[in-house]
Structures are given as C-alpha cells and as structure tokens.
Image 1: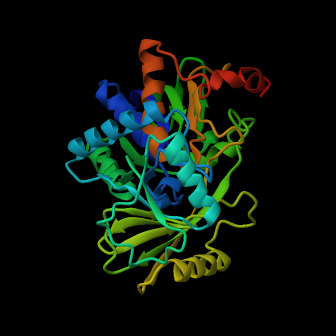
Image 2: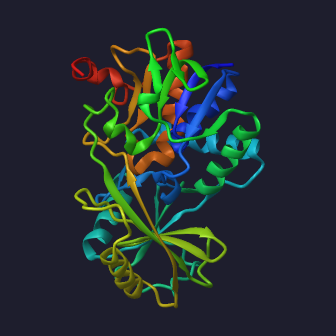
Image 3: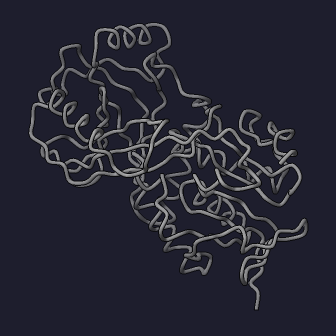
Length: 353
C-alpha cells in the first residue's frame, strides 16, 4: 500500500533538515530520503555563523536579516531536540599580516558593527601575535553533527525518514504527483547537495562545486569559548578537540583527503600556536557552491512540483534556515522569496532544459 505525503525531500543535510523542520511546524506531511553512503558537506562543515567575511572584513550578504533569524531558528531546534546545538562564540582574530591589521582597524573606525577591540583581560599567550589581535562579535558555533543525528532519529521515530540511495530513474514524475517506490507525494524537493549537478531538472544551473578539507586537532588548555581565526580557523568541536581549516579548492582531481592540505595546516598551526597539538582526523567534503554565490530556492518553471533548495555554499549554516523558511512560506502563503535567491531568475535557462 502506498504512503501518501505532501512533500518528498531528497537529502538530509542542512537544507533538507531545515525544510522538513518548517514543514513539521506547519503540520504538513513529508518523507525524507537520505543516502547512507554519501557524505553530506554539512557533516564536515565548521558550523560557524560569522557576520563578517573576506580580507576586507565586510558584512556578509543580508546578514542583518539572516543572523537574528538563524539564531532564533537554531535555538528553537535546540529546544525541540532537547540537546545543545548552538553556542555564542566570538571570533578571536589573530591578524596574519600588517595589511589585515590595517583592514581591521579601518573597518573598526568606519563600518564597525560587529568588530571589537581586543579585551585586555583575555590572554594571547597561546598564540604568536606579531600583528596584534581583535574580535568579531555576534558569532556562533552550531554542532551540526549533533543536530543532523538527532533530527534523523526524531524523524525516523515519526516514520518520516527512509535511508536509501534515491535514483531519479526510480521515480515517476507527472504534473499531478511524484511516485517513488511506495511513496506518493504532491511535490519533490531536492536538497541533495552535489547530486544536483547531475539532475536533469537542475543541471543547467551555474553550479561551481568546491572541495573543502579540515583537520580535527586536539589542543589541550585552549579555551573553547572562542573561534580562533588567522590564516586558518580553529573552531571548538568537542572536549579539547578543534576543527581546523578550511581550504576552498575550485579545481580538484579527487574528493579524498590530500596530504598537501594536511601539511599546509601543520605549517600554519606551527606558526600560529605556542602550545602543543595532536592531529586526530582529516575530513573532506564537496560543497554545492555556485558562480553567483547566491542560493537556488524554488520550483522548476516547467515541472512545477519539482523544487530545489541548494547552492548555499560556505554560508550554508546561516542561510539554510532562512531560505528553508522562505521556501515554505512561499509555497503555503505565497510570500516572496528573496529575488537574488529565487529560482525564477533562471526561468529562461531552465525552460530550455
């Protein structure tokens, strides 16, 4: 006997988790299909929400709206799952060069919203700081692994979760509904990261996958209440472990951990830290970034019950709840999706597909 639902969600990274969360808040039926074999980029992400970006230390895109929304969303998810997933963690800046110090000081005087001078009461003895230090306020760390695992358990208990390798050839998609095995849904939403590159409905979109790597490093006696950022970033992971990375490699031959990245991180850690550390793990993932650096949110212009929430890139931790909420609000209440993210901007391109 077929199970009937309103939404079929393919993928349970950040996008699929938040999309299903907002559906559950509205009491709308769904089933998540997630592969056991494919590693989601969300599972190896740092989990950092940082309102400042780049060498010029400018505010990230639409952060004034996204930041309070995302903090509220993760706090609500935390309450629902009854487990700690969000913590405030200011970025402790160790300026890597005179140029970066000057950039920080310029922004501090001219566009200072999140930047702060270094607190004199905080020790810098764990680091080499030839160019000084500073702070970025209103930053957060999200325990993505805990959140994804608990949400999977939560939805499995509710019989809304299927572990399977979704193949488009196994689905029958008409303008009325979508049938996959014993599931019949009104709509299907693809939240499956890099798999979208080969999806015939959306492979014309300007995806630009990038490979990201990170090390998990044990650093004893390093205070875990901060995110540390220089040429590399150290993010509190758990206990005395820190996530260290990450590179953004746009042109790569394989998706395996690379020795060159590991050696680069070791050199950077040796230069940055004045205390010992030990490497415990090496992570790798491919992000579904895109050339526009703006998400893909909405439905295919011809096959109107086939949607996508993807292309969140390196800012996925902050953007996922915000745009998942917009997706559902647009679908149910006809509220607008941000024009720079709405899939309708590719209507002509996708109509040819």
